Each structure stands twice: as C-alpha cells, then as structure tokens.
Image (cartoon, rainbow, N blue to C red; front, side, top):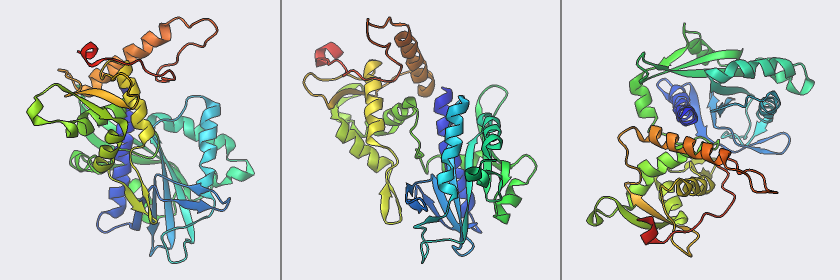
Length: 343
C-alpha cells in the first residue's frame, strides 16, 4: 500500500509543480512534461519536467523520484545519474535551442531526503559532481498531511531541503515557514491532470488504474454487471492511450502509460485470479467487469491480495537447480483457462 501511495502522491507533486510554474502570474514562459533534450555528451535525456523562465533565457529541470533505494551503492548510482541533466543541454524550446543556464531540482519524498542528502555530501567533492554543491542544484522534498484518524487530507507541502536554485521567485515561495502548502481543493483538481510520471509505477498502481478507468470502457450495458469480456492487450493499450493522452513536446509525443506496464499488470492480475485467460490465445484475457468487488477501498483490497501472493511465492520451495521465484517477476508463461473453468 505504501508503494501505491508514494507513486500516486508523486504524480500529484508533478501536477503541483506544473501548477505553481503556470499559475498567474506565471513563473515560467513554457513548461514541458518529459521533453527530450540533448546534453553535451551527445545523449538524449528526458527529465520529468522542464521549464523556461525569464523570456525563455533560463531553464529549470525537475527529476522526480517516487522512491529511492535503501542500498547506499544503489542510491549513490541514482544521485550520480542526475549529472546527465547538470551539463549544458540543447534542444530547448527556444529560437536557438539553448539557454544561458539551467537549474536542476531533484524532488523526492521527505522519508528519502535525508539519505539522499547524505550521499550528495559524500560524492560532491569529486570533480565531476561539483555541481551538487553549486548554486543551480537543489533537492526539494514533499509530504502530504494526514489526519489523526489516519484519513488522508490532501495538503501537500513542498520544501527546499538542500541547495539553491537561481530563480528568485521560486526561492521566495519556498522560504515560507513550513514550506509551500497546496490545499486540498487544488490537489483534487491536479490529480486529474496527470496519472503517471516517467518512472515506472509499482504494478499495483497500474492494476488499479486499469480496473478503475480502462476496463469500464469495454462494458456493454446490455450484458449486465459482472459479465466476462475477452479483451486483448493491444485493445487495452489503445484505450489507455485515449484515457491517459500523450503530451506533445518538441514535436514528439510522450505516452503516459507504457505497453510493458500494462502487460506486467495483466500478468499479475492473472496470477492473482482476478482475470482469466482463454486457451490458445496468448495475447487475450477474460476480464469480468466490474473486475474487483470489495467493501473496502479497492487500493487496500488489491494491495492486501498482492502482499499475500508475494508471501506465498516467497515461501514456495524452489525447484532443485532453479532459483526461487521472485515476487512480481512473472517469467514463466501464465497457464491458460477455459471460460467454464473461470466460472
């Protein structure tokens, strides 16, 4: 459940940053989601969000991380990877394709920020990573408040935890005591703007998006509630592209939801016996609509079911000579079911 909430909240943070940059009077002249830039190493880089400020002379790059690894080695690699954004970049949406300079902002959950900053301080002394202690690099952290009873009240707080940008307006906004607070009403609207960030979501997040938004689009009212539909992965992907439309940046399209994420989600749903599979049709699925009926919130019900499945798979004895199956890594082809077996 924590992974689901983390990713969902990070999507809200992306929306919040977009909102902050574009609200009147706008801080940025242009904001692009997943723009494709080219750094001085000749590599194409795709940050989560990029903006142009001050008559498009200066840039901002935001990289969002819904989760950071606990392993210091893996976390160090994540921080080092940010360097690809810190070097000069071209293909900005300007007349020359360049800017005078751009700032890089790493955005992560408040639970991860202390570990991230510790690693930053350790490697900042290396010549290649000196940008980590220079103006123009910052780490923003975020949190969402919760009521005493455990119910989530949508008050997102964005703070500048480390470093400094060269944008005076942003710096002044985040200098407020307690950080920049976005109220519940704003976040409710913003959550409907985007559903995914560039980073791959936890599989339970994709499953819930499919169940709540995509599968109902295939329902035929004449067949009644609970009917089972035979639907292909391609049909689901095409419908998802309509519901989660592409963003156009720099004359290219970026797709919010990737086909591979959908394929993984369908495989896990089949393993959980939420959906079925017809015999001899490897790319088709038998999907009841509504797909998951529960008295508790669907997020809680699915995450609990997935946790039990993971525990079961982890406890299953490994076959001799083969490694134990890892949770969520469905490498074997799913078994098939006849329609009458499914019922």
